[in-house]
Length: 197
Image (cartoon, rainbow, N blue to C red; front, side, top):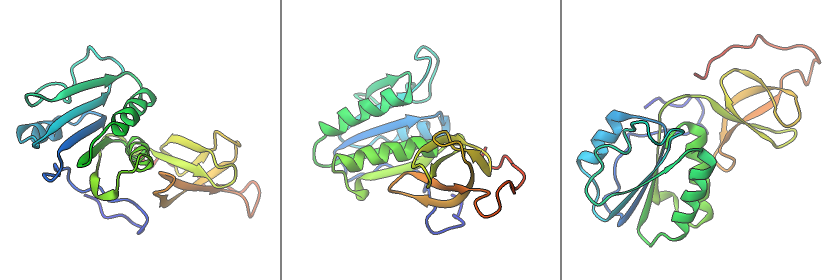
């Protein structure tokens, strides 16, 4: 686990089952065979549903192979469809439900925001980042979130401003803050570097 540079940046501790839960929902938006094998070798008590995002549902997936006996499996081709399924599942969840969000930062925080909207507390949520370090960037000027940003400067998809991608993370928005890069001196921009792969 990397130590964040700023206090606002989220930490991603190793993923473990919350053994006090009675209903477990694993939302997976990315592949991590080592994690899947470790989690499935010692499954939690109670019900387990694995909801994975996979563009090609016929392709092999670590989240579909080696499932513990009795585990339910759901697959969505797109993240937005998976998030809608997640919302529906969480609305029907019982007390004692636990959510485990695995994937890129954007997917994790979209899933956590859904869980919070349906009333799940922070103690019922676990998160583990895998795959890309691309960032969701919230434009403080037009309030649009541009997803999948890998550079220190990125164009806002909402207003077109060139944004400096800050390390400050808003848990409420599930995104890093972006400010107009040349607000003080129009036209003066730093070199664009790909730093979030």
